[in-house]
Image 1 (cartoon, rainbow, N blue to C red):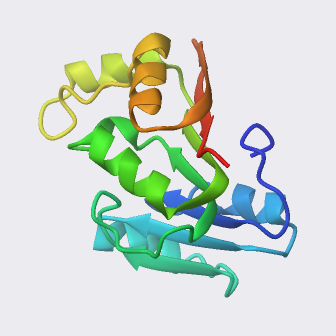
Image 2 (image 1 turned 90 degrees about the horizontal axis):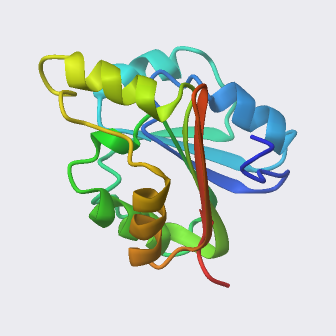
Length: 169
């Protein structure tokens, strides 16, 4: 979470939290000050995450981030870990996330394995993830720019993928 710039006191949106696998890392970065709103489209995933007994500063919301109706400027950082290729309409999702971020808010899109590994697994899979791919650096930068994010940077390594951007101040 160091790369994302998460700091104590921030309001963090964990998009596609799944079973809450990155929540402990977010809480460590927040050092007891701040909050995490964990959003997922799957009630089953949220049930597993809730059962982990996270502190009260973590709240769970069943929603599709593309249509989530959080107020404008509700969050200082949005973390999308291992979820980006699964958006049906990535531009629409990113635009809604941008709306929910405060001025200067951070967008962090990550995958704990490299883009090529994710894309290979998704190409070979049958069912819902088939065809869901992580874009390359240039394409991701273009998508972020089209959604009015600034200062975009993309690290696309064999073992790690990280796209960072900000909502303008």
